[in-house]
Image (cartoon, rainbow, N blue to C red; front, side, top):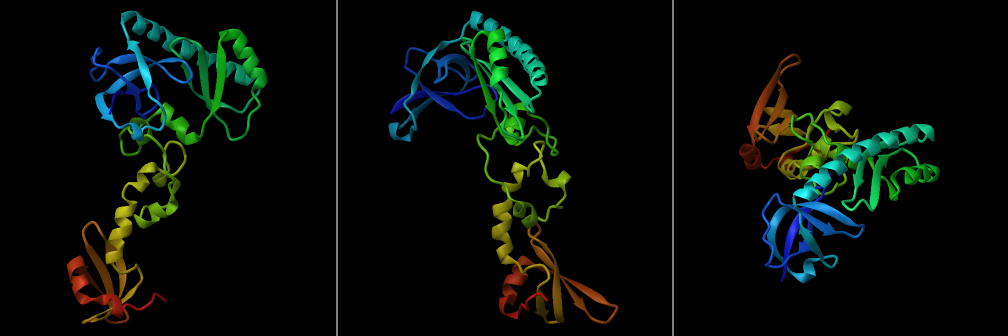
Length: 280
């Protein structure tokens, strides 16, 4: 078993594990310097101690370089200010070279051996000349990373229509495919303001309850289905799986329509599967 500490880095919810020994004790909220695959970086402790089996790891564990001290934190604050300045410089260069790029986030490694510019664009961008200009200014390794709009929104953050911080920025570690059928099955109005997130794509939360709706709807007839009741032939006009009932309309006369409310239990007892007529 490997003793590890779990760290998170800026603008990501993914937890990375690093080897530790018994000499250094960590607590949640501590900051550490670690040697990553691209250079020295700072991470925040979210899991102070954990035992992991070797076969659970995708890549070999790296060591914690050391816990941060006061000087490290002061340096990190300066780096944050330099990142803001670098963002403005990037915007100026973007205008100069007339490139269709939207800057999302700028990240300096702690040892300043590399600066990474994250941007979104609807097309492929040739930024080679721009990189040359940036290298002259920052005098370090320049990396430009084109990311998708969902990843861009995750980095920027924001408040969703629910009034809470958007899921991708607060707790989601990765994205899963979202389909419009997930909104349809939950009877959500199919207009852009109702089903789209800040990124302009379908909201990730549409997937949270879609499986529940899909399984629950198997217990009920489809909307528009015709059902034979004791009082006559009726048509299913409403299915409410949260309150567990259906509404069946029965036409008693040319101008009189009777609505019958049937609970989930009542519907199950009626054994209506063989009495349902296909929707016209």
